[in-house]
Length: 117
Image (cartoon, rainbow, N blue to C red; front, top):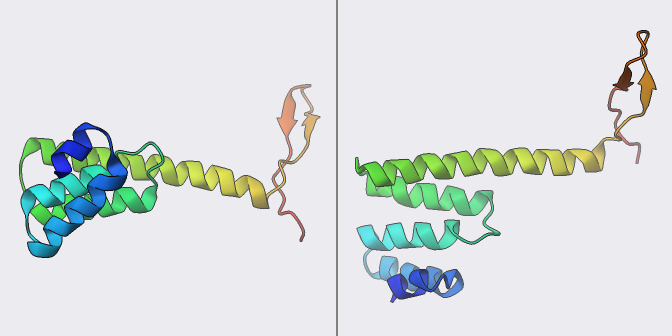
């Protein structure tokens, strides 16, 4: 059933179905792979989703190339999302500063200063 949901890209229903398999057999290899795919595939997957998928795939403890590549891909996604979050939230708490012309006439940006609340 999980495979059908994943094929249809119905990730919302795939995750509970995979979790039911894992409730019955916590070490089920396909259940872990499919739950990892169901949480990491949606467009709006976040850092927590990727970390859960990584944990599931590492639990398999496989030397299979496709699983190792997927773990590396997910770790890269975590880095990308964390950087995106830092940039987004950093802008909320720091002013962007002002631009001014330097001694050589080149436009430079002033240092960021914390916004006073």
